[in-house]
Structures are given as C-alpha cells and as structure tokens.
Amino acid sequence: AAAAAAAAAGAGWGASVGVAEIIKEGQRKSGSWKTAWQKYCTIFGTGFFDPTKYDEQFLVQFVNYMGELASNDLESQAVEQGVSLEGKGTKRSAPDASWGGPPAKRAAGGAWGGGAANGEKGALVEKVKALQRSSPEVKESWWAYCDEHLGGVKDPNRHEAETLRAFVEAYAAA
Image (cartoon, rainbow, N blue to C red; front, side, top):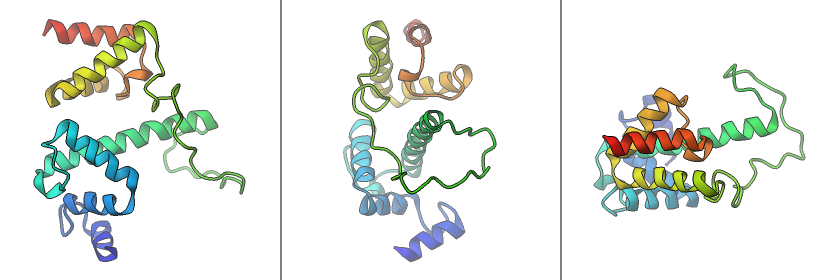
C-alpha cells in the first residue's frame, strides 16, 4: 500500500496506480469512504462495489463528487471559523491544543442532516435531489446550471427557493 501511495504521489492518477486502486485503498483505510462508495455504486452504478467493475470515468466522477462534498463542507467550516479562503495557500497560525480536529457532522439542521430546509424550500431541495438521482444526465444538468449561475455551489440546501424553482421549472420545460 505504501508503494502504491508513493507511486500515485509521484506519477499522477492513471500512470502506475489506477483510480480503482485509489478507491480500494480508500475503502481499506476509511469506513466512511467505504460506505460512501457503496452508496454511490448503489445509486449511480450497477450495484457492484468492486471498483474494477467500473470504467475510469465513473471512478473519477466518484472522486470528484467526494472532493466537492469535502470542499463545500470545508468552505462552511471556514465561514464558521472566520477563515478567509481567498488567498489559497496562505498560511495561518496553527490552532491551539484545544482544537480537536474537524467537528463531527452536524445532525439535522446542517447541510448533512437533510432536514435543513422546511416548507417550500425543503420540497424544492428534495425535488432537485430526486431529479439528480433519477439519471446521470439530469445530475450533469444541475451541475452545469450551478457552474453557470450559482458559482459552482451544487448543494441545493445552500440556494434560495426561487433559484431551485427556476431550475425545476426549466428542467420540466425541456
């Protein structure tokens, strides 16, 4: 495993270490990663959990998806902690010893809880999520809409009801 990680770091993805091996290593090292991979395969794949059963494009889409989730959550953490991410790569002082690492995911009420929005917005969030789950093409349409109109933020919970309604109506009209 150490040799695979070293090769991946030096050679880049797809050179001597494939994306499937990276996903396998993630499953071995992280229970959360393994669970996420299994759910992703169940929703968007064929239900097989072996990464070698999928083409590289599918694997890279999973890695990108995980990266987006982490990036969005870290962005939220930066806002909560008053950290500016404007100058990427700028160093800040190390947190004091009382900082115990990243906080656990928030229960209902946060972006991870699924219960962040009520009423009309909640219904629209669920509609957008259901549309994304319905097919990879719809998901790509949502992502393109987010990239073009919403600054690349793909979490429906982070947008106003009017914005979500506009997407749902535009999709229904297409």
